[in-house]
Image (tube, rainbow over all chains, first blue to last red; front, top):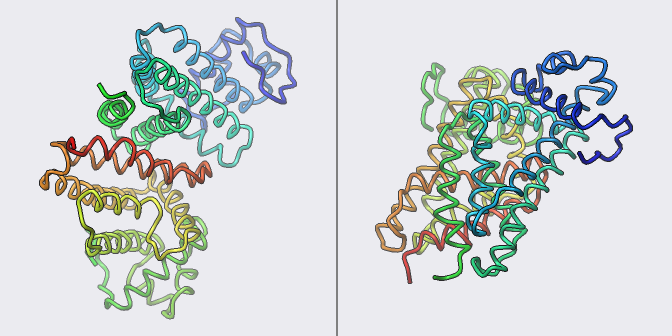
Amino acid sequence: MTTSPGRDRPEPPADTHEELMEAGYEALVEHGYAGLSMRKIAEHSEKSHSLLQHYYGTKDGVVLAVLEYLIDGYLADVQTASVESPVEQLRSDLERSLFGPSDEASERFWAFQTALFELRLEARENDAIREQFARGEARVADRFAESVRDGVAAGAFREVDPERVALVLRDIVDTARLRRVVMDEREAPERALWAFETFVLPGLRTEA
Amino acid sequence: MTTSPGRDRPEPPADTHEELMEAGYEALVEHGYAGLSMRKIAEHSEKSHSLLQHYYGTKDGVVLAVLEYLIDGYLADVQTASVESPVEQLRSDLERSLFGPSDEASERFWAFQTALFELRLEARENDAIREQFARGEARVADRFAESVRDGVAAGAFREVDPERVALVLRDIVDTARLRRVVMDEREAPERALWAFETFVLPGLRTEA
């Protein structure tokens, strides 16, 4: 776990942290941000309400830590996934961002995305949550940029600005999730993948 | 003006309608949806509060009519704009969607987009506003699809599914506006135009 700036609470042992973060995630999936409480989070673990308070303070403290925990997990997973080429790498990162981890049930993934959308609305008024969102997005964009950079270095992609392409990919993921969650457009993630395959990937590849 | 389904109020004369719709637009730009009231809308016109009520009923009645008025205006403008080629047509429609009409000050355009975002949140709980949004989006997507279809017919574009491409373009506009308004990313519309020029347009064009 990377300690968040300004954190002034005792560091939980790694296994306790993991248990409480999973509980926070489950509680967000089940109750959403608005319906979340410290008690409900604790109920999803074997640990006590007071231990949860001891390590994370408030509901927002847990939520900030859960966001960081999920980003860490996402990045650890994609970094150990061994794929053959930069093209496959980029496609696999994008699919994971659009459809969730392959071992996660789709319903759960979208329930969590709905909670994230609520959180983003909350973030408009809440500096700490907004900053955590921005940090998480920046780390995912860095990951996309790295794959694009690898592709350029390997000669598979044209000389493009990897940071700018990464932001376009992040935008593609972002709009797909939002339309799926807010407008109930169930085909939005598929369309995003299609746009990537049809426009972005051919535009990135060096001429055959 | 196209009458909305279920409308059961007297139809205002065209010039009165236009004056009150402009007042509604100004009031939305100034106060946002949350701060809007019938009184504030009427104050932006020469007409009385009671006349406004007579024709549109409630604040939501005005807002629904304003959304329709703006879409009608957008479509009338883009349809009379004479451009040389389907490619220029599509680019010009997209630029207008991303940056607003060229005679509209950018500050005003973004103040209105912020009000639209608030309205979209409201739309989650409000069937009439949600349906009006969906109708407006569908009409703009139809317009994009028409340009793509023209391009295919003229041999400038490859054989693609115009409806699907239109939704991708709508998604590009949507995410750019959202990131500009919600995350205060001032460069988001420029990045969207860049993505269009760099990936979508070359992917649409027939091989030279």
